[in-house]
Length: 528
Image 1 (cartoon, rainbow, N blue to C red):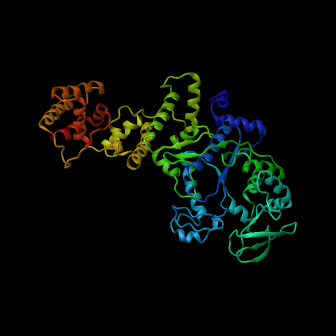
Image 2: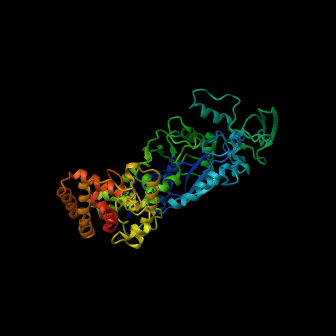
């Protein structure tokens, strides 16, 4: 792809140009993302990760060295037990403690935070995302930020003044820009009451009434609050780009305060962009990790191949809200992706501007930017593929055997798609979309004499012409059978569906019959 195209076709390229323009020519650019692993890291959280990855990819395609960091804010407080966690009573005992000290009742890892982290770290390579992970609990508890905490304490008044600019109620005079986990209980139920101007910090455990002075260089109990921690880390890591959710980027939100606080640490705020929320189809509002009722990346990858998961985010501007669909809209999403692929490979004629736009979306949707497919996927509509899978009860090899002209590369990709399609059929497809062919031993449809005559006539035509004629040509025999037997077309269609799948309606009849083939059809019709 030419430099001109990279500059003009996609929001990720435009953002990469903006970063270079605003941050100047640098030896390495740092792009950041992060989250608190307080619960299942859901598909809404993934939007920030993929937004950064796309900008990182765009920067690298412009010949820039990029560091892509992902912070696990696992030294945050455990505030709520998600509804989807086992042994909630046990977890409630750890409320107000750091999430990295909470046990993982699912048995996935050594602690609650790590269990949620591992789930994400295992799946991100599937969609082509490879960040460098930073674990903030480890960093804070090893006193990596001791000097930054001391600096924040020394700038207490300046930080409070900045935060007060954006507050309706000013912070109390006894507010401190640091929080402490009690050495007695590990909870954050503490209040700072003094600082010696160097490294000694005195606090009181408000539950126990105990007082203690700790050295912030040697004890693992101190942490900066979010609105100070975020800008401190921008300065510490030299972050050039980090997007934010619309809650953080609203006027007076944490980004506004952070871009002022970061100057106290001797740095400038990174370039940012706002991303909107992702909904699950049929569920309004923001998805909540701590609530537990979420869909994660694993759930989405059950229904969509990795490149289509990426496509959902690549093809939508981050500032636009959109829904991840598990209903019949799945068919449209597959078709939209396939149209983009057809445009990329010149199978669909569009104007040059449209081709440039869709081609860039296709490239960025691929998991490996150095292994863009050299041929399109096998061009079978998703609906038709679902019909094949139901005809053959999910047997992928039997479906592949029915497809003409498919290459080995296409088979590999189609197998992934068939797995997703079968998952969708089993879990989410509406009942009227699903069917199974009548099997030996199933109760026969109670046909009238007139209907039996029509079935037998139709069997002759299916045996002789179904495999040799086109769908359109064979349709003539469907209508001829109805006419010859004095039946309305609609009644005859209903009859054939009842005989084949036990339902009054089904897939479009002629393509369905062709997909089944004369052997499968006549095997059923011969029972009448």
